[in-house]
Amino acid sequence: MHIFVTVKSRKKENKVEKVDDLHFIVWTKELPVKGRANNAIMRLLASYFDISLSTILLKSGLTSKHKVFEIANRVL
Image (cartoon, rainbow, N blue to C red; front, side, top):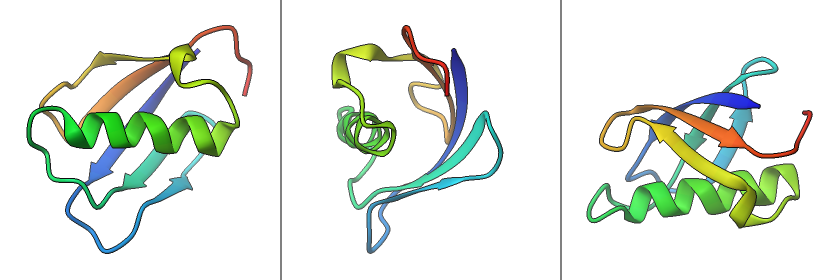
């Protein structure tokens, strides 16, 4: 399953907000440097969905605010 994430980095808190079944907004404290924000986003999504970090893969948007993640073997 693919989910679409809008990222807000350098924020005061880490949180995930569901917009609809496939779209999410993720706030992270991490800076978008050397993949730190992407790693933080993946950890937040894993925690939000209560799944293993290894089941989340960044499919597109490596340096963009708009990202697509694939969640393996999961129906949300």
